[in-house]
Image (cartoon, rainbow, N blue to C red; front, side):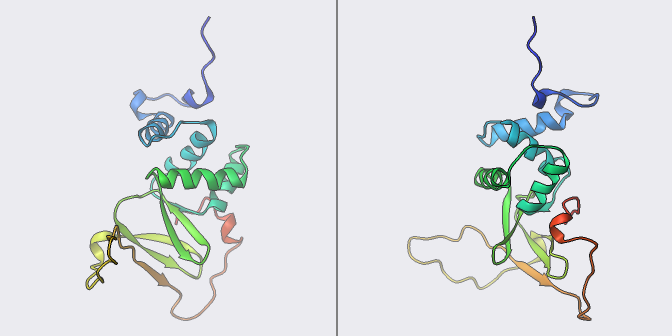
Length: 173
């Protein structure tokens, strides 16, 4: 008798080829990065990577998981984001104090950070030239340079949102 198929292996809609299955792509991405595709990692990987390049906070991803009826704790979301970052699947973008976004685009690039609505938008790496870097201290080397350009409305007016930024989990930054 055949074993029941695991939920992560289930393809929710007809696909032309197995390679085009987003669930299979998440599983492959995790395994390639050296991570076991657990149910939690698969669920969060699906939420993170199925929507293209994006920037999310842990709180935004947690709220998306709740709406998707995934039984995950906020601690699990933080731990998984840290694991994904350490494995090279995500890039952390620290914009202000403890406020950190996780970027699914791990290529070399920079960011605009809109202080008014707390959104992050990519700037292609070729659009900013960084010159005059200091020499690294002895025994160290510069591994990367990240530029965050902070934005706010020129007229000083407030941006009104209908809900707190943490509730904008579906908002693509």
